[in-house]
Length: 209
Image 1 (cartoon, helix red, strand yellow):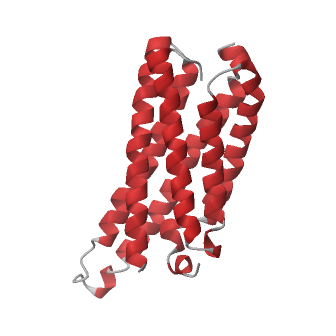
Image 2 (spheres, helix red, strand yellow):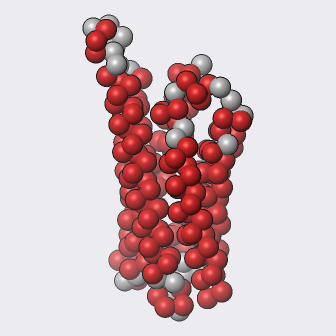
Image 3 (cartoon, rainbow, N blue to C red):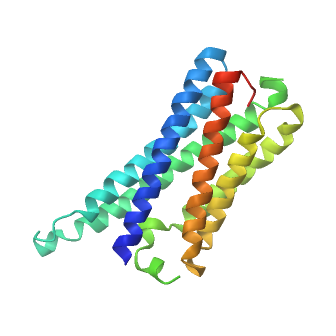
């Protein structure tokens, strides 16, 4: 059962990776077309998110496929790799959120563009410290975006960050119910789709973020 949960996590992360990579590519193309530094920073943030997701998918997949015929003293190696993976994943992804926070606090629109299973393997799919720090950073991002919303821009971005914040809050509640995991993943995927819609609207229609 635990193996199934971890494999589901890999699938969700892989889907999120490709969407984040698409957001990065579209945002970068839009930044080159418009000369917008805010779009460049947005692209950088999603590149960091995509990098974190790729690291998680690659290392977790390797650990799951680690041959059990290895000598007993080496069988702890996948666990060590997973612990390191979780640390790197958390640091890189939080770095992306710091970029978003810097973007929306330093470049406001008015100036720039007028259940128990999870206790078995918490280091694989559940890190409460990472979720709490991410939620805190995203709360500031949503706050800055809500303040800047009065100057116009795309509502997709505000809604996207709001859903991303909500997904991290849901992950904090993960020990309460297994069903919350799927709701949190779905919310995160929906937020990424909104971000992709937002940057596509800039690239294709010239709308403001």
